Length: 144
Image (cartoon, one colour):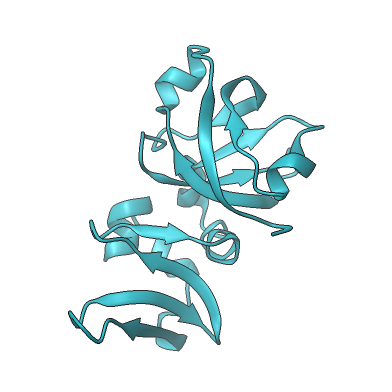
């Protein structure tokens, strides 16, 4: 339910829910991390949100509804972003409607491949209007 709330209705259908495992805090008992077959998908943030990894974003990107949480960057900047560098709004060629400040987003190349996962600093409307500056602070790049 949390995945559908954060990323859009029916996005969780792209995950094999019966094969997910979780780690919990010894101190609070709250959920900390989500794994699929030993690979980290996401870390649970204190506010209840999910901080996706590249692997988690790749799995969720199999759902058509997840595309509204993605930004697509122009050719030529992929190498920098895959190394963990931030995404500037001038390099974004397409942006999903669910991109909001502080929301988790997947960064895609022009072919639709996930190259990074991070946190949006600008809204979709601001990016489309051409507001300058960092649009996505990359948390995990594919090459990190």
